[in-house]
Image (cartoon, rainbow over all chains, first blue to last red; front, side, top):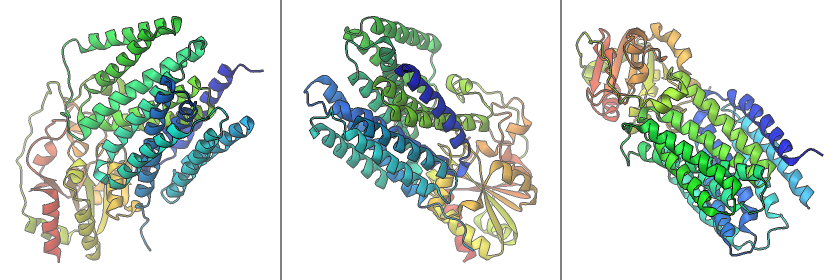
Length: 95
Length: 450
């Protein structure tokens, strides 16, 4: 059995290289939507926050988790919507 | 159940990756964003199925509050204000990771977990206050200039030492919360200290870098709560921010450390004397020149955003095309306050994206351009970057508008650009200055055409 630390670090290493490969191909004209879209993805913290906010115990960790859910939701909802709004405007020349 | 949740995260990661891949072309980008959003939905639903969750009340409240704020902001924000909004969102992401790291703390955690908790608090905290300062500078609620003072490097070094010391103590005595608070406080302070010395013109670099940090903070939080999907998604964002940072630095011909530590545009600048004289032109005369031109290039800068001139620019562009003139746009990578800022503004005004040329594509064509119209751009068209070795921007790649037959510069007044550097372009033989508000000047040209 591989220790969890090694396993997680392995995933980290592979995703960083994958990220470089993916983003290098994005043209300059899409850099702003790329950023706001990436911003939405960084709201993934919400997944970690959910289990912390749902323990049902009225302790500090629960409040911190609830705060993190709210902040990360701003990122997720706002990020995806504004990116969609921007990308809807990008049009090719007709004809 | 747990195994199903873990497999749902695998699906979600695949959707993020495929979504980002689709974001690589304007034709598929919108679908890519939707795919990525579906990936997020899958991850959130999977997280909600966790058996450990007994009380959904606070989760729902968090969602509703955050979702409402985010949704309203996304709908209301103006395209010119995108940099501020992205900066603010970066900050929220950082703060969320800080809170998750803090909440994940329990007294029997192993050292590896403690280190990742510290990292998520540190990166999250720096991202949070750094982004707030960036937001303040971009929205000009605080001065946008670089703030430098004597002994700044010493103060920063002391903060770093303090963070290292407090972190080490925290790992040894995780039950003692004073070390934790010290790390949180110092991280927040450090975020302020690293962004205040950076001037407004360097903001594209800072936003990209903070974007990357917000991803890395999520990544560290993923280690702290032992969650794969946070690590995958966080590192994708981290990589994206780092690449954008590199592109921005390259476009300014400066190293990252130079941007972060030099307080550009605030030091004394060695100026070569500029020769020639300023030649203003009236709207009417500008019209006659444009009317006879067969090839026009428009070079927008942040000034176009400030004047909200993108829609009249599009209108002028259509009139020129009806007149048989070829019109292209030349976009410098650091024009505006964030990567790709100009492209979004012009897309908003319905300019098709294949008419927007990158610097390396427009420069070789510049000799065949009859009129280059510079709208609210300054440093990105400054020939001093090529000619004057004493200039602070020497070596920065610029759009060579001065090789066009005629250059019109639309400018409010003779004040120098954001970086505070004199621009010899204004004194060149083939340059004509069209003074006034860019929106009004272009409106005047449109009236002449119709």
